Structures are given as C-alpha cells and as structure tokens.
Length: 207
Image (cartoon, rainbow, N blue to C red; front, side, top):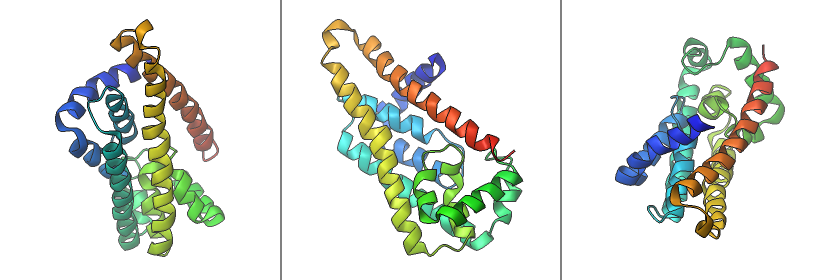
C-alpha cells in the first residue's frame, strides 16, 4: 500500500503539468496491449480533481475516449494478425499459452460480456480487444460491449474515486492535505488488493 501511495505521488506532478494528454496517452496505449499504469493514472487524476487541479468531467471524458479508442486499435490488430500475435508477444504482456486458451474459451462462453468485464482484470484489460478481433467478433458488437466496459471502468475508478475523495473532504478539518490524500489512496489500494486476489484466482485456473 505504501508502494501504491508512492506511485500516486510520483504520477501527481506529471498529471498536474500535462493533465489530460498524459492521461489519454497512458490509458490509450494500455488498452491495446502495451503494459502501462492506465488505471493508476486514472485514480491519480481523480484525486487531483478532488483538490481542484483537474476537472472531473474532462478526466472522465478523456479516459473513456482513450479506453474505447485504444481497445478498438487492439481489435483491428487482432483482426488482422489473429491469435498468433498474442502467442508471439505473450511474454511481454505476461500471459501464457494456456491463459490464451482460457481467454478464448471464456470469450466463446460469454461473448460480448467478456469484453465488457475483462476491463476490470489486469492483463485482460490490455488484450481483450486483440482477442475479440482475433475471434472475428463483429466490430459493431465489439464497440457496443467495449464502450459499456469503458464507461463502467471509468465510472468505478474515476468517478468512484472522486466521490470518495469529496466525501472525505467533509472531514478535512481533522486531516491535513497529505493525510487526506493517503486515506483516499489507502482505500483505493484495498479495493485494488481485492481485485489482485481475484486476478490471481483467475490466473490460477489457467495454470
């Protein structure tokens, strides 16, 4: 949790100076398969909104557009190259061949809803567009479920973090700025820890 707090503190000056472009770029490249701290950047941006350094509406819009467009790029990459791209570069996105098979099975089982909720799982968030493209899912159908997933993801980690921070600001008289920042980061870290164990459980089923 201290590491998460330190990471947020490290990202804060970049967001304060470059704001929406750096948020868009990070979420965008993460969404088509490049390992990047898109989710952490979104959380950090939401916390800055609590302190009035960024606008929450623009943060939510920027992250949503980046997520949808990034996944769409991933879709067309997968559609053009097929699953061989995932297998060839699996070590760079930290997935094994058995996990690729597992993803394809889940995609066949749940279809578009897999695209929607894959955004909440580490690694799947980075490659779900590629998997959908490789499976030749119709792009309009993919766009619908991908947009739904992006809106939910941004709503939870962007707007959810912002609302949490605003609520805690009511007690700002009891805490200094650093303490308030740490409390928000701590609660978010606990949620991310829960998701981490869910991810581990998912990955364990593929070994």
